[in-house]
Length: 269
Image (cartoon, rainbow, N blue to C red):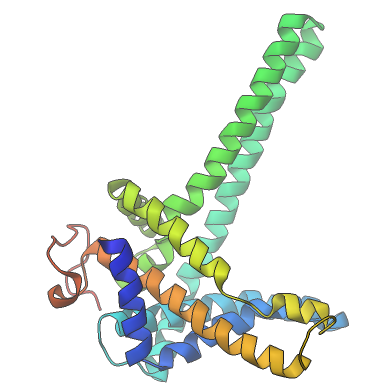
């Protein structure tokens, strides 16, 4: 089953390609900048992270794809992938945020339509019930849209990096993969999210400043930092491995019986 096999793939890649920890550590470090108290430098640091994150993500995804496929990784390939996919990853992030914002705005507007009609037509019991029902439907529709968007578009970034797709094509590719493997994808997403949740992170420690910790603060930060980098790098690699299994682009000896996804570009590395 692709879900459990991808967890095995992630462990194999991490064990045979220690360089993954450097790429994953960079992503983890960038995500922690927001937890630091930088005073007046905080806005500049947040901007720097926002600009650097797509580069680091592109480099990591390319490194993970190569590692899962059993290839050789290097700093040069990390940098090249980060630069080559930078603008498309930024565009995908911007388009995703704008899309979610538009959906929320549209749902909110639809929810207010019955309220406006009640105000215009005058208050009656039927009108009030209609307004409440309309608002409830709008609220549920917003929740469904906010849950469906991350589910169906979660593989757009690896589609950009691993298959060299454009932003819109990557969204379409991700949605198609999830739609054709809906049960497997939902199961994987829940299991993967649970695994990520169990990985300790440095954010709470940095926020607390060491208050209430049973051991020396620097030692705790070091231990949790190492566990966080290893755990999250493993989870991110599993995510890439699952995408590759969905597309059928792993070597046959690794992925077992099955057919190659017809939408996968031939010869993708």
